[in-house]
Image (cartoon, rainbow, N blue to C red; front, side, top):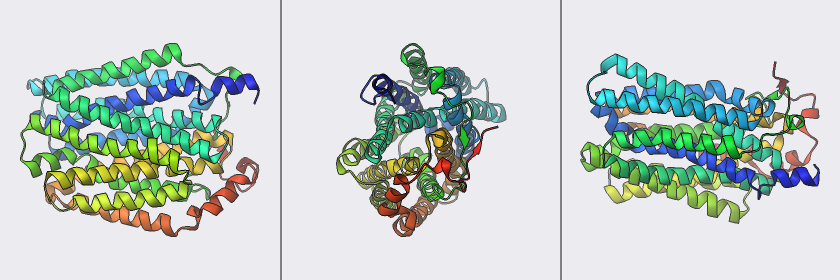
Amino acid sequence: MTEARAATVNPQGTQIPLLLAGVFLAYLGQMTLNPIIAPLSREVGLAEWQIGVTISVAALMVVATSQFWGRRSQSWGRKPVLVAAFALGTVAMALFAVLAQLGMSGVVTGTALFLCFVLLRGIGFGTALAAVPPTAQAYIADVTTNEAARVKGMAGVGAVQGIAMIGGSVLGGALSAVGLITPLLAVPVLLFGALVLLAFRLRREPRHELIERPARVSPLDGRIWPFLLAGFGMFTALGFIQVITGFIVQDRLHLDAATTGLVTGGALLAAGVGMVLAQAVVVPRSGWTPPTLLRVGGLIALTGFALLVPDLGAVPLFLSILLIGFGLGTAMPGYTAGPTLLVSREEQGGLAGLVAATTGLTFVIAPTAGTTLYGIWAPLPIIVGTLIMLVVTLFVLLHPRFRTGALRHASAGPAPAADPSSTATPDA
């Protein structure tokens, strides 16, 4: 890498902060919607399971398109991918705000309303959001050259997501006090702001920096499947409680719809505070390796899940959510950075898409299952999430791939792409 090239893409320069700003605004838009999605569903007459299906469809689109976006970020360039994604997200969420208003006015109801929710919030926004993490992660993997820098960079992506969770929880909760439609109007404005920022400020790569035929990485690749399995388990556990948080708050604390949006925003704020503390303070300063981050974070998150099972009142409820955010915030950089140390540059885009797809896959199943189980017995989805988190924690404690020495040995060896046993194949 030449000095000019290094200066252009230095993580301390202007490009990574711009990239992180785009990630922040994307997730700020998503998190602004979260505090009011439960009371909104009841205001427009949709059942809990219908909201679960909507979120699951969004996750399905993440699974279906993440590897595509990740590889295209290397062949088309990161800027065109991000601009296209934010344009799609802006249009989808602007139409979703209009639809919600029509639903609350009784103009669109029943099955038609549900199908439009799925089309706009599920398919449209899910496809757009799928482009953001793999593009950001592939970029950071490309410009970092050692384990510590890689972990710190991946933690930066997670940190801005945590900050977005805090900001979205505050913004969504506060705006819901004006009316449930107000946070919905804010979402496309945030996405359009990101679109303008990236379209006019983000550097587009010269043609020679792109990879015309990025490698497709198999989820069964022995270098990475243990990390994918651990991440799948963590986010499945989270998915069982994330969508029902509003229902838990409303039912345990006996609140009306408007107050539920405000208090749910406070609960998600606690999770965001935990995530930011983990990824902006603990991860950079601890110097822990990816396996250690997974172990420590898993144990902390498991404690939070277990505390959430019984109905102990408001303070333990908020504390449990704080612990879950802190634990998963600690573990996430281990999950995202660990496998990037084991693959070649040509595989980074495909790997980033695979990581995003794995995360998205959890939200195909968990929101629908969680909301359905909640309708049967309120503590049931929390118990299931706790058991899954227990299995994940035992897995990362016992599996040999998560021994720090094994990871360092693998990352110090020859480039995996030169290994004839590699499972990666060219993208057709």
